[in-house]
Length: 141
Image (cartoon, rainbow, N blue to C red; front, side, top):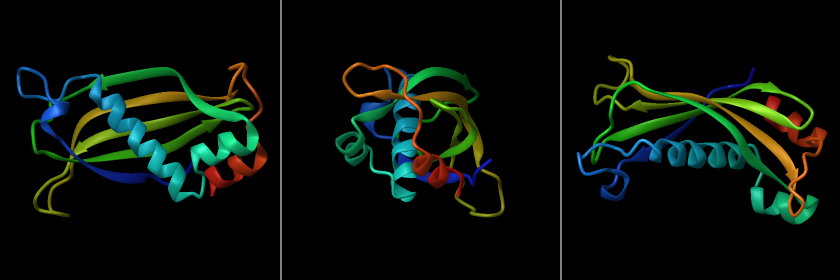
């Protein structure tokens, strides 16, 4: 539906487990950071949205598949792209890719991929709300 957004992330010591590989739950953190920066690149700042509308985005569903491990000091590219929008939620596709040294000659290696449903809810009652048209327009451009 929309263009693919790319965000670079480096794997730090705190991201790894006792085996020296990225702890599986940290991919969700990487995905969160990329989604936040994707929204910011579209002029959608989440704190300002909450302050102005009283509503916010929340993750309501995840489906993640792990393919290969990332390790300490690896450079990753994390993607975000809009797949589908509804009245109160949207589905986003995300991937974590291992950045290759020879840019352009080898494709980045897929480490983890998933789809996430993001809901638009009232900030205090957490009730689903209709996503404002202005936000949907920004997401689809």
